Length: 289
Image 1 (tube, rainbow, N blue to C red):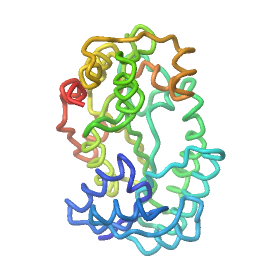
Image 2 (image 1 turned 180 degrees about the vertical axis):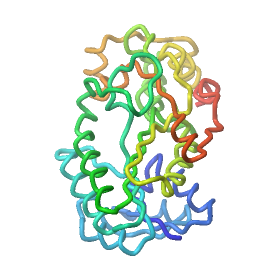
Image 3 (image 1 turned 90 degrees about the horizontal axis):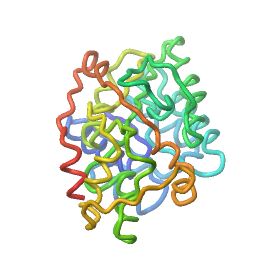
Image 4 (image 1 turned 90 degrees about the vertical axis):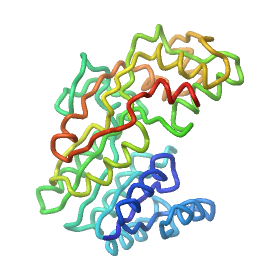
């Protein structure tokens, strides 16, 4: 079996390539630069030169593969349009083969306690609201005999990477205090990068039209998370409280997503795919950096 992956040189993509090859699956990976090609090659994947805007390349690479995992995203002007065109090309190429599309739980906005994939969508933050329409288009192709599946990662952490590292630990090292948005009572639905990678592999065999919240069952208050991150940043228990307005000025619009209060269950993926996250001590790993 051979899988074509976009975003393979990225944070989640690197773990996903390792997971795929660990299951004996051959991987081809989109690489928009020589640096990206070297990364995916070192992981055991065969690079395919091109960018997310090269729809002919995407279509042909997907056609040659037995399935597709679309992890790549271009956060620039026209993000939604680029993703929509890329997804269409990949699905056109994949045909009746499995196509796994990346969403994210942020589209649900704040949740009222612990919810699952059937929760109502409520005021998604600006940075991710565009995903809703694209995911509808992707899933609609299940009615034509195709096999689209959407995986929605929670807040991904692990191996000293991810958003927590970029927006909390690194600024904390510079400022001598880790930022916390608001009073820290809001929750993050966390998942380890190696666990979410395993879910992507399992999703290749999921029923057409399925949607899975990729969360590890760790719904932790931001106050606890930032306290752990302060240890990784070398400034134990030194926290700088920011209003949402201050956080947006400092971090950009992603601060609105990081300020969400979300608690999610990953029970559907466990029940239907046998997905069992094994990295379940987020605070300990986050504190190590």
